[in-house]
Length: 308
Image (tube, rainbow, N blue to C red; front, top):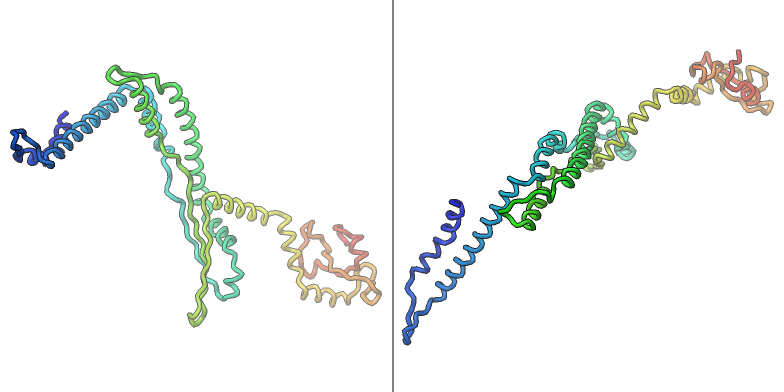
């Protein structure tokens, strides 16, 4: 009540000076109020009405807060979940690559570089992503309990000091205002590539930015690529890539361009292949001692079996 009086006095004080000014009297003896006095009276009346309404609503809100089972339930629920669903800061990282030439800059794959950088800090990124996903999961539990609490308690409380319709409206408004914010996972991973010409005349720049879902997807891609590279399939492909044109020519020269199994040569019209003596599928390496010249027919007949 003291607060209401303080508000009322602060509103009315500047107007009392206007009311203190004398009124004018007409020739017929009727006292008339000047326009400033009329305006002051109107403002005082309006301010008094507004202050009364504010006091009423404040009192009604306080009563609802003190007596509502729904507000008590959401208060208890929030106390249990607040630390588990509070949004975490944005997951941020910046990677920069300085190209050594314009051609290198043009060919540079921003996403591939970013994946390699993320994989270097894999544990940190994975744990940060998981922490945010965990909070999203906790919020799902919070939402389920919130819905159940609302259905169980909203509209079940009342107080004789507040009209039931007003009580329900205030209760619903305060209940929805009390709902905790959803912890939406956010990320900003920026990868930038730059190149500046030797004389500094030209500068080039390109970048890519990942959000949370994109970061999660690229981390999974990087992990899958790494796993694939550790498989037998990848190791076999690596071995086959080691069979360079120069190594192929060395083997043909060593074998006098003849099939080591049937002796046929290119002059006989056969197609010569360079074959692994111990097949790559059986762990054979791409080294001279494990390579031989075979004609197409013998190579197909040998397939992936040992030739010796």
